[in-house]
Image (cartoon, rainbow, N blue to C red):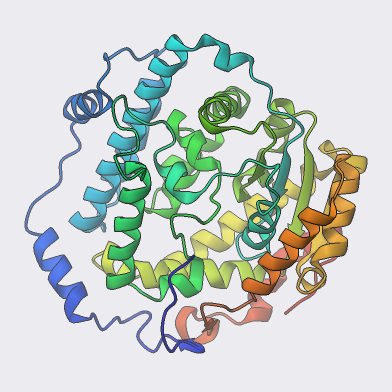
Length: 423
């Protein structure tokens, strides 16, 4: 169950762009800013090898070392990051390297993993705040579906000798729980925006990043160089790598039918369908104003701890452009996915209308929607009403100097293509 933030019926950020830090936040920064964090590739790789408990065998035939160098260069180029964020990103890279090493070792021991079929996955494609998280968590209530909880997305492959302890708790889950508790103490409003509690279903793009080939870094740092580098990659081979990680996760705790989702798929529909040709895809659609204002408000709030200053104009320009790129690619490539195995779901039709949407989605996927699964869906809906963790009061004009209508006008092409209602 996710953490509940008390007394948050309505959340209004009076200090979004000029933050007033709490005592806890000031103490955290005072402690973390005292020492410069260094990104030494050899040292980081050595730490990953030690954590994995395996040899240092890394296959660089696909240019992984070049992607790692570009990834780190993009972090170093962001001069506004606090040491707290640099430390978090350094730990993240070491963790990705460790998981990559562990996967390589697991595949050597069990080569049959790469023969495991990923059968008829359901995939949700859409922008943040368009209903993707709601829909994927709902479908994950079907016990026949394999989903990716947040704790597993962060540490997908257990290191050798690091299985559950005497009380049966996986140490990967315990780490995710401790990190979430620390976040709730330092930035509790995060739950109202996007509560990534350990059990919450997460995006498989985190698995893609084991190959250092996703857009994830853009959410952690101001990294336009990485965006351009990522967009130039041939994602077909990297999506194939992600599929290999899904095969390993299936091997570790099954089953073989997955529910997946990520906004990144909007601009990678070709590689997505080449990798999962029998997938059934649900496209979620919502007024891009809701998407952009949510993203930049969340980023600005997070930046009070992540960065030395907040630049609302930069956030507006970058993320309105980024969402524009994602949606442009979705409009361009939507027909790559066969109509008989896909649906388009408008946000204004989703809330309270989930069961008919699911019935049609399952029908197009050729999967029976049993009474037992229907009952599970209804229990999830009853227990997770919209706004469960409070609602954010957005104010684009006050915080970012743009009106909703001005921002919306940039996305006429999207309204022309899909059934999207201005909010």
